[in-house]
Length: 269
Image 1 (tube, rainbow, N blue to C red):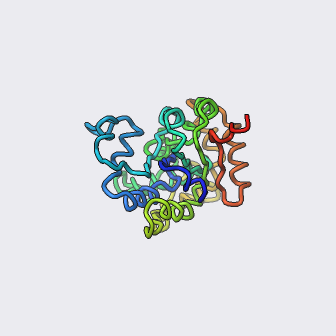
Image 2: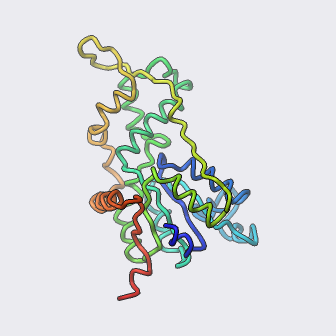
Image 3: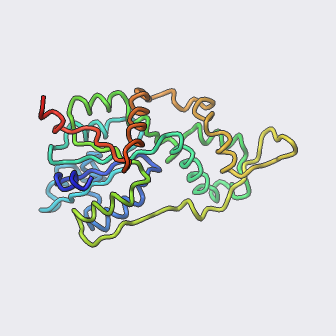
């Protein structure tokens, strides 16, 4: 990874929700101060009234690091990056297995919304299932809707410089990014999950006089059936086999960083 970062002038750091994005965003803000909105504009196509054209004129030195949470409404933003980035650009996609990501997203959303919806003393199981099915905020931001057949076709057709990185390796890659883009800047770690008060789930059909369980225990028991039971993979998901193979290859790498695609792969062709 150190060598790759030394060879690429522009780095795009992208991910779905709940894949280390907050820590990366805070780091980029410190590494490239006052330039954050530029990157969002370049990927989204517009931020408020700003356009990509205006963003190009915003600074004589555009940021060398561009950060973006990719919305899972579809693969379009990822496909655009695959097609339009240069040979001197590197895309780092921070990956998290999607069922594990879903579990974290449910926990995060319920805690974040507990006071607003009066869930602090417990959430009805039926209500929790409705929330998961509806897919608000981080819950619906499925990585599987980003890494679709269209996305893999764009990678194959365009050979962008692309690395998949396991989200648990964020701190290590931030150290390398600092070395090449903002020497002296240390990694930033943001984890809002460690200080959350447990929320009970009030069971619809309690067994053995157990009326409630904590949400973490409920998720441990139900997670492997939620995507099937609530039909969460019915729309916008394809080429899961490619993603699962990529995950297996990624986890087999000693540093959990997989150099997945590059125009350099074709030099011997």
